[in-house]
Image (cartoon, rainbow over the protein chains, first blue to last red):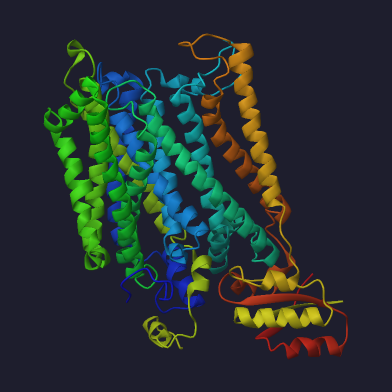
Amino acid sequence: MTDTVRGDAPVIGPTDYAGVTASISRIALEHPGTQRWLICFAGALALLGLFCAALIMILAHGPGVWGNNIPVGWAFDIINYVWWIGIGNAGTLISAALLLFRQRWRNALNRFAETMTLLAAACAAIYPIIHLGRPWYFYWNLPYPNTMLLWPQFRSPLVWDAMALVVYLTLSLLFWYVGMIPDLATLRDTAPTLARRRIYGVFALGWRGDAVHWKRWEQAYHLLAGLAVALVVSVHSGVGMLFSVGLEPGWHTTLMAPFFVFGAMFSGFAVVAMIAITLRHAFAIKDLVTERHLNALGLLVLGTGLATSYGYVTEIFTTWYGGDTFDRSVTLDRLIGPYAWSYWGVVLCNVLAIQLLWSPRIRRSPAALFAISFVVAVGMWFERFMLIVITLHHDFLPSSAHFYAPSFWEISTFLGTIGVFLTFMLLFVRYLPIMSMFELRPLTMPDRADLGQAHAARGEAP
Amino acid sequence: MKDFMVEFRTPDEIIAAAQRLKEAGYDEVEAYTPFPVEGLDTVLGIGNTPLGWSGLIGGIVGGVGFFAMEVYATVFSYRENFGGRPPLSWPFYLLPAFPVLIIGAALAILAGFVILNGFPRLHHPVFGVEGFERATQDRFFLRVQTKEGAEAETLLRELNPLAIRGVPS
């Protein structure tokens, strides 16, 4: 097809308006590949069950069932919170930022990227509540009239993050839903049974494709996209400030906010690539998610990965240049201490593995891109582990240093959140339009010469 | 008055047809398309929406309101010396006020979108037109209300549509 992300090359394969509608709505209405879906769903439900068990344990017995303790007060809970939120951010960026930059190739990716964002943010939101010693008081972080005449501490990054996360969840939901209304109308109009037409119809709000409504939709969607991009940058900067506003060595640096934003984009683009490749393979939609998309995603992963690597180098440089004993000690601890595996895991996965993406052949190979993206997701998890556990296990006083190891329920909760994500992602894939049909339609070129083959493949007359 | 729904196959056809109807003096033409067709809103005279303004107002109300609440909380209601920080630590207060500004704007835009469009409206006369379900798939429709008479129908036929159907009231 094409070597680079050129503007003149066709964005999607040979198809037309009806073809786009058929390819996507078929998945939601006819459920192809049900057997494979059921096997995956069974696995996801198993992890979901593990999550429920872990949730009961943590709520009934408290954070003592986890391995974190003084001095490592934050462990898997915050590692996974930051990991999930980071993944979520990229979905918003792919959908909103690329829309505002008029990158039309994003139209094949935005729907499931937005879904990924919503679910990842929801999985992240679980942790700030359950990791509290008294989780039933989680709402004390929010300003509400109370009998104690107290307010939350507005100077604290924890409160900033509480506001940002609530807003991010709400905005992601709004953006996802508003973007889906016209497609829900299509499903309403093509569903085979009256019951399904009614269900889709309720959520489609009666959309009829009126040109006046389209104008309002475009303006609303673009405005929400602009708001979402601004919010994404501020949310993950805020998460970075959870660390930088504290005085811990290895955390107290102004690098954290931009470094976290780049890291979030990096891990999130990798997960979007994994989802895109999986859906492309599972539902034979190689004409909608093309090699051009894989190439673009590979370049995004490479670019943000290089930016994140620059962050690692900067950290080392500022530590050396600053000369602070404790900062230098933490850096040495990262390189050769008891948790050095996480640091070198970061170097291997986030810095070295992505260098393969310089090659266009590797970028366009679905298997290679999937493997590298998986490695990146794991590497970003290592990075959060390195950041949190190494600093906390040995910060200032030698007498306060202590080893940390995760407990069974800590690991179970993490795997459980993956189960939550997979369960709802699979439900989305089965019942909702996985791509934005109406945004893909104008990208088709109905006069293309090779369109006849596409019709023949679907068993239709040209 | 007769109510017609005219069906076309491509965006170019519907724009050309809308142009002709405008020139013939039909001001209240409605269009139904499976995606937003560029240039159609100019031909039909659909202007800009007030959603930007509602977003601005919602954002200001949200952001300024939250900031004012923070100022009240820390300067008047529960005024304490926290590590020597000034009572009006306004750079800190901007940081949580920003997301509230965003969501204020977003909710105002959503409210404007839903209210102006009249959603949810699950029943509408145009849904009764045969073949209209393709308006959300691959066909483009124009709804024209004409006076009784043959010349109106001749004009519609000259637009070269795929079909002309009546709209049930």
